[in-house]
Length: 83
Image (cartoon, rainbow, N blue to C red; front, side):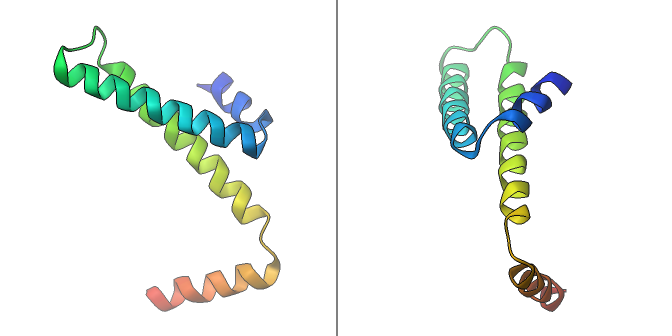
């Protein structure tokens, strides 16, 4: 898992999005195969799902890091209004 985290940090945004779509396709195929005939190790589906979540989290953190202070303040006001 730590190695996976380091790999994600070194990738660019374009590489992350392409890896995300690839993993989503693999997970979809694995889920379908498991529903139809069963796969040897169903825990692989969980691992794919978690890898997808890791990449989405990294993409979101990079998106928030690129926001301007004014946009961050606006976002904070929206969050406070929802509470």
